[in-house]
Image (cartoon, rainbow, N blue to C red):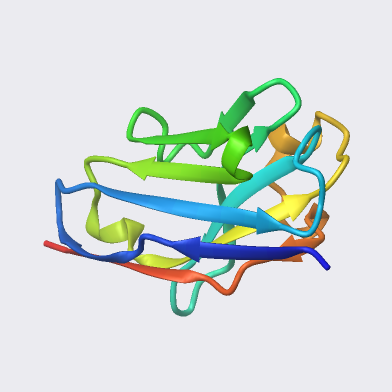
Length: 128
């Protein structure tokens, strides 16, 4: 059974940094799309970043480009989201998602509806 376990959320002041981790269990970690999505109260879920683990290509939402970095550690079956220069508008519940054996193009679309498996979420709160 596929399981995604997130960690690393918390509270930070504007301008600070956090690193989220997503450990994947229950499937072979190759040629998959792994994504980070977020949802703030009263807002729709939105894509933040994604990576195609087969080749490492990445994509980012315009709102986080230059501040967030998604990366992978295949030996640990883990994907990370390094978040720098955090802003109050980054406050949300952050979810990790997986689409095993995805077409590579999926990672570029940041469409949460295409992902099969989800973690429980980790809260990120940025104060001004």
